Image 1 (cartoon, rainbow, N blue to C red):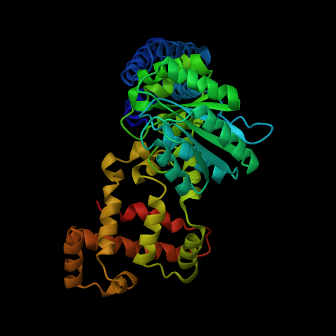
Image 2: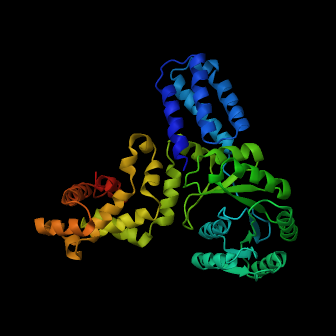
Image 3: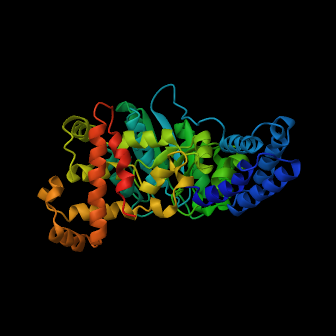
Length: 445
């Protein structure tokens, strides 16, 4: 997320950080480079100009230019203005005074609308608000079945209509069922089109009139850049959106839509889709997003992912082995890897740790390295995983052949695992599985 924009912006801002003295000319030259980076990331021209005007006005103030670290002050100003550009305050859901709260999900075909409806249901469920899903896209083949399948995966109630039926009638039926079953939230997936058209908007207006939704959330594809902004304008004009969900931010999106959409449409980005999994929907907290864009990490986001992904019982077992008996085996390490992989791509997780994205080369964050470690361990017998000391030369050669890795990589993994176990023994009495921090040291170089 924001990789290309982050890298280029960090390169420009590094020139500010490196200077002990800043002049007005230096600030103007540097901000011209920031302008170029933002426009290359497909940020709206008017939004870019307004953003830089605010940054320049603050950066050229006497308090900044004469401060002890003017470069750092300029970087902080850029951070603050990025957060303001994204909304400044963390977005929230408007809850109805009497349940169920209706969340109307709208958007074009191909934006990830139906999948996002499932992700929203999953998120509300985790928060302890029992949701129900309603399928009102009765035009696209298999749309109802897709949402039904998502409802089963999440484990929530579902109501859908028949192809060619009346979506408004289905929406009203779903609301009554949600009321009867005392559901906290009703997430309504509506029909999309290949482009914005009046029949589509009229249908959505009819559903809105019947259900009086607390939230009307547009699902927009971040990879379409400024087209996503124009689509948001069209939907907002017709429906008065309450917020936007940007999908496919884990792909090749340059970040322009995320930085432009609030400035142009005036509605907040409430969530960002970061992957295909049902848990891959993050709240669009402006300050945290600004931190990630400027490669400051996102520790809160990392903790949230860990809470969602880690199996509590399995984690307690691992903790007992690390801090209790100290009998942490390669089998246990394989379990630990599996837990971490549930949190998302390893490279993305490392970028959420402040400073790592700037210090570690991309090759060091290559997710293939974890797969290589897994392949090596899976090529061992259960006895070898529990007692790596029995691995002689012929066994190591067999493991290397079975995993498709070199004997040198097998030897390096075993050596580093031995060192990690030694470190764990020294950590007895400390709380938490801090030994897992050494996991990155086990990745083959």
